[in-house]
Image (tube, rainbow, N blue to C red; front, side, top):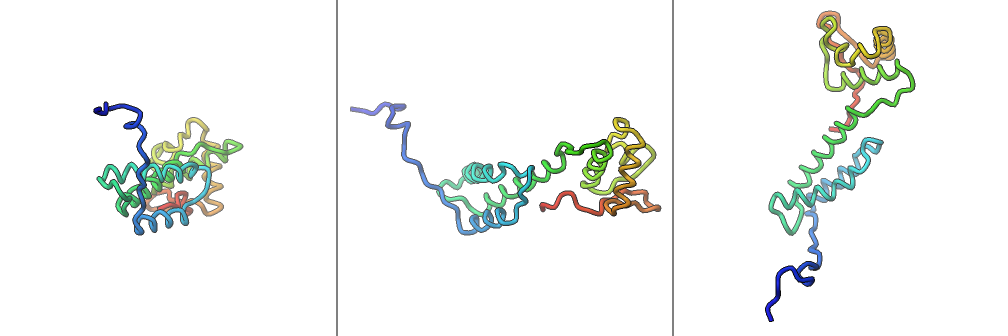
Length: 166
């Protein structure tokens, strides 16, 4: 008697174990040890296992997950964490604190050249909050050494790194 495809015996096969190479395990363990645990890192560790499997299979490695797949997944998760931190919603309790967060986020990507109403004012959408709130927030950040500007280049720079994951 010939077996028909799609019968219950064909649909339920035993799982195939896929292991990590020692190099891949070292990369994953290093990521776990160095990862920042905060609100923006939620569920990244659970994505790690799924992405390891998918990346390994897409690279053509069926029996084990190699270092190349592990490195790709760790880079992707670190990027995801940086994006989540950069675009996290404001947790501020007043308009000045919200503007301070917007300024920090704008400068986290690098220096911003101030050209009249363009530059930092445009990046933080000063029209929504007003010049008074903007100037007060900027003065607070300068006073406590978080941001600085040079008189010659008129570039605003962050003195404190918002994004610490490499």
